[in-house]
Length: 270
Image (tube, rainbow, N blue to C red; front, side, top):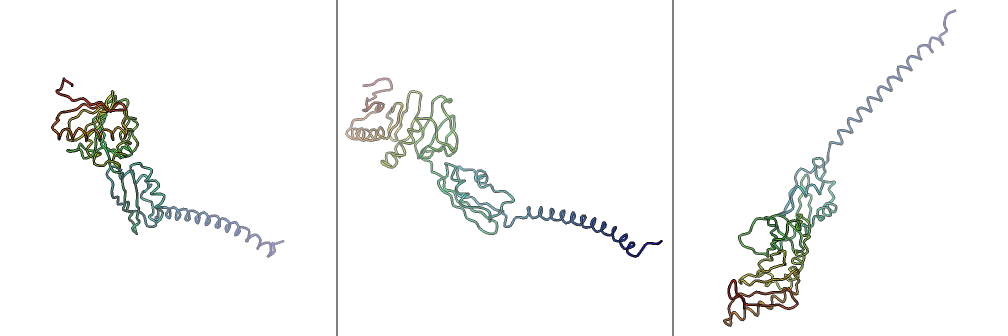
């Protein structure tokens, strides 16, 4: 007995369903692969990428340090740069006093940096550094022809010296000097300009003042009170010079009062 029409129909439909299922699975895989490729391409596509970074006002802070802090790279969008976060990141550098950031569309970022000014110079380990009024080491500098700001010369054991650019000095005598000079600069700016140098030796601190050769010893501490006393004492000595009393004086400020002796020669004191 032959097959009925219904049996022929079922026999022909079954393989077609299998083929259709295989085609659906195959097409789904192709669509997924295409989607992955498209999404990968979109990840590389950056809207308004940062192509130019212009940095102004830096003398000590390296441009690479600024770019690193802002996390700028070839796939960073100008739109995604958060100016408030960028400022906060840059101000973590103690050498920076202020920052302004401007977006110039379509592809430029301008950064204006205000660094702290050098209030003193530091000579240590055969290198000169610029130091802020707060005692922050700003960076290395060349030897100036003329010292327009006071110089601190460290002649102590190198093991006691730790100088890290961007950080405060850890030598307690240097910290005393920078702190006292910061106050002196506000209270007696003219006298501040007359201080030539501080020499830090193992036995204490020696001070040199412009326009005279007095030997001035401060002992192991430098305070604004001692500097004020020195200011008054030098005025007295200058007046005596005008009255005809000449000479070079040895001044010891290591006590509560100043001890003054006139040096007649290199080897004789009176």
